[in-house]
Structures are given as structure tokens and as C-alpha cells.
Length: 164
Image 1 (tube, rainbow, N blue to C red):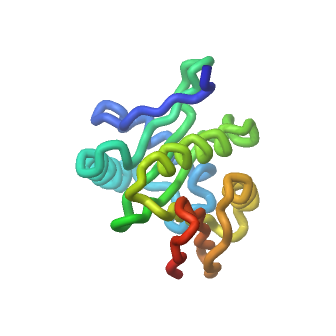
Image 2: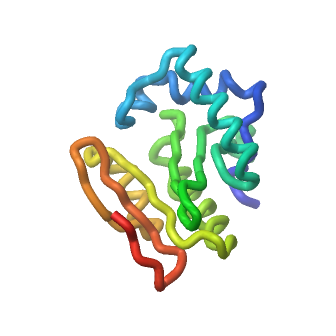
């Protein structure tokens, strides 16, 4: 049995979402910062709307099936005709336990199963070594690096040209 499960966020899940995006430790490497409750409500509503627009893609709550606990957020969002963006936020008590690699691997399997998509990108702060290591393990390669983030990608189709 898989250790993790995914399900779409629903309106009643705002407090779970806010536990992540309102947490300065979780958001330490994000280009913005920990969000206020008001800011988080706006981004949560936007995420719910995107989830409705692209069935099967968007932001998901992630839970540990064994512990029956909410552990974080996973994102596989449509960003172009043939491109997806991956993202993941975990509560600190779940860091370093292999969840991020498991989440990334599972979402890449999902992405590869859809022939429409050829590329998955991810953005990570250059100093976030743990996330960079996870992405590397999952096959992502650096495309560009800037002061606030590094763009990495993994090709789903061998003949796809990476756009920078």
C-alpha cells in the first residue's frame, strides 16, 4: 500500500492550507514569505478555481495514509499547452523522511501518463539544497538560475526542446 494519498483541496480545507502557507518555517525559501490569513484566503480561492478548470491537475492536499495525518501540499499545475509545473510544501515534522521524493515521483508518473504534456518544470531557491536534491533524484535538471530561484525541468518526451 502507498504511504501517501492525494486529494483535491475543498473549501473546508482552508485551515490545512493555511498551516503551510502561513508558516514562516515552511515558507522560508519561497520568494514571497509566510502569508497572512487574508492573503492565504485569496491564494486558496485561486487554487480552488484552477483545480476546477483543469480536472486532474492543480493543488492537492497530501496525507500520510498510515498515520492518517495531513502532511502538506503537492502541485502539478498546467502552465502551457504541453507543460506542467511541479511544487511541494510539507509541514516541518515531515521533512527528511522521504515524503518529498515520494510525492514528486508519484506526480511525475501521473504527468507521464498524459500524452498531452511533454515537460514538467519546478522552481526552487538556489539555497534550498534539500529540495534541489529531491528534484535531482527525480530526474530534474537545471535550466536557468537567478538570484531568487532556479528553474529545473524534466522532459516527458525525448524529442521535446526545453524553452528557457
